[in-house]
Image (cartoon, one colour):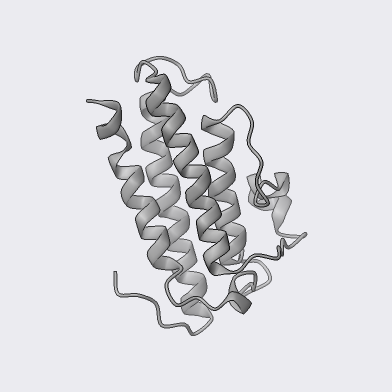
Length: 154
């Protein structure tokens, strides 16, 4: 499997996340459908930070908020940033594109231990990020449905 082929499912997951932002009003990006359920913006921040933390040695982003790394750290401290739907998705996509470019430039051995986690190979990390992105994108759709939104038919 080539490095490009390894990233194909991640590419699809990022595209699908873009669909989840379709028609989302800026005013609803940081709204929680329930106090115990993260907002679309918080979920996007979590995914963007994962790409940055796992693939980039250092990165700057308004979405880089350490509390979004893990649900228990976010739930009691809601994140609200001055970014609308287009800005949030654009920032996640920017971080993703930087992460992918670095991965493709470095071309690590897919069976070698990743520098991000010593219990994962590079191949598994890429596979995981496809799942991780798709999983949280599904949560975004659920948040929107609970808010009464009509979402794109995907």
